[in-house]
Amino acid sequence: AQSVTQPDIHITVSEGASLELRCNYSYGATPYLFWYVQSPGQGLQLLLKYFSGDTLVQGIKGFEAEFKRSQSSFNLRKPSVHWSDAAEYFCAVGGGTSGTYKYIFGTGTRLKVLA
Amino acid sequence: NAGVMQNPRHLVRRRGQEARLRCSPMKGHSHVYWYRQLPEEGLKFMVYLQKENIIDESGMPKERFSAEFPKEGPSILRIQQVVRGDSAAYFCASSPPGKGISTDTQYFGPGTRLTVL
Image (cartoon, rainbow over all chains, first blue to last red; front, side):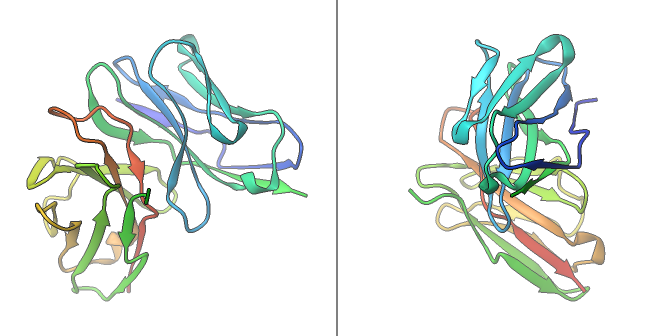
């Protein structure tokens, strides 16, 4: 069955520290992979996406993610976290060669940033 | 360029009432998707619509739920005779027009939080 796992429900980091949010997926076809961020009261904003090509993807707000097919992972990273990064982060899989529009989301990781 | 708009942002209904959730896609987008997020869960696909057509409603509960995307106006997700289990956040997304089934990136609205008393 197709699924996305975000093993960390909550993560707390200090401002200025590095960040890595984990995402593992199970998907039959070549996946399209996404990271979205949701600030309180806001919609989901697309941070970055991977369709094909270079496995290291750069996104907005200084985020990057690396697609590792052998590990079925698409972890999100940021070298130095800012207080404004506190939010909930969702990994999703969808699209791909089968063209599916049914995005499958993980349960999210809530990030807290300490001053 | 305004993003995906949803209203109301919060909706409270008593059991047995009807809930109507509205979604206006991004300007120029003609594909609309509805997702539901139950507490402590990820977003789950409900339905995919193009103008005046339901493309895929495989994620919709069989009863009480319906969706439309008319030629003019927003997309509507309608829940009749709501029950407590319908309490959730309902998100709408849209994607640009294109031939056939969309494979484009979906852009999400802020969601409607439905509470059923």
